[in-house]
Image 1 (tube, helix red, strand yellow):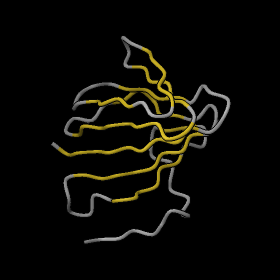
Image 2 (tube, rainbow, N blue to C red):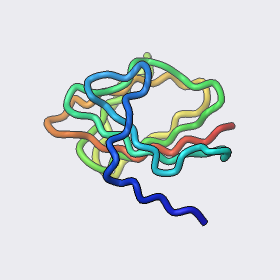
Image 3 (tube, rainbow, N blue to C red):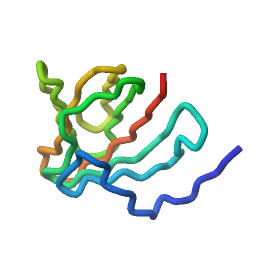
Image 4 (cartoon, one colour):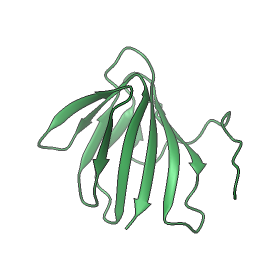
Length: 110
């Protein structure tokens, strides 16, 4: 068993992300094949269009809303909604709402 008590930590802005979005590792990869993160995006914050060759990612919206763009489809999720991106699926994210967005991001290495 591992317990992480870093909920007050700030997190980092990953490469290719913008507008003050920050990501906090709740359960880091640390030798495992998965991670759990909390991603907080102020209005206008997000991530550039990218994909992961060997990661699946679930984004679950905890607060606010988050807009996703795959290059062929654009959609907005609100609190309680989720999306799964498989390896190779392109995704761009941006908070176009009126308040901070917070997402739980679960990443599994394939």
